[in-house]
Image 1 (cartoon, rainbow, N blue to C red):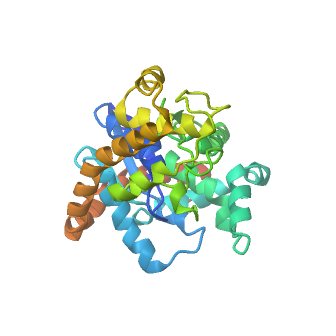
Image 2 (cartoon, rainbow, N blue to C red):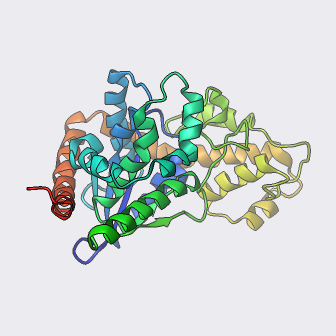
Image 3 (spheres, rainbow, N blue to C red):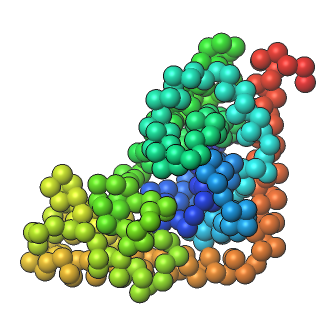
Length: 332
């Protein structure tokens, strides 16, 4: 806890165009915390390099991700927005915590198995240990609450285990963080394969709706979304995963519950429903896209936000790191 406020931390990788899954499952919900919590939102560029990046693209996407944070409603005056590599304590604490993390714990991480299968030519040590870096990200700020998607729960549990292990070995040092999963939109699925999560790296462009997609592209993607041979708009994830996924997206953008959506499209079929989903999505993203374009034209402002955020984050991170080093026995 910092001062009187509890702490929220989260981060997004600058490794590709962000999707509506990133928006609905994470970024859209971040702004609601800023009145009650001290919020740290990070562009996690250190995490991005577990997969080979084109340097110029990584640099550009770092600016883009920060601009999207702000365009999605994160006020830099109310939230600490910063770039991970600008705070050296992330990498330093990660090494220290590596020594309190068991090999077996990391080998059980399902995302390591998934990413190793996708990047068989580059199964590097960073890919294996990056959940420890994620734990360092969280624990550095004495974080109370971490907004996570369902697929990140395992990594948060590891962070909790590491914090508990360190606290037990030395004395209370880290806050043991809790996870927060948004009640809706926590996992947006692919439009082409509703059994899989929507991924910004999907080779099928029709499967993914990006935050910065133009309206005609959004409508086209929703029009081609996989449904089923039935015609009823009904929420039943096991029987109708495609339609249920579209209903979740529509619910997130309109605020209507599943019963209201079923009534709205009763007897109207999938064509009308897909069009309405596309329209709701495009309309909601239009102001975000407009603000993003304005921000990207003002690089100096984005660099000012990065600098201010890094100063705030460094101040808090160094306090935790100093405490950890003293507990371990380092001369500081």
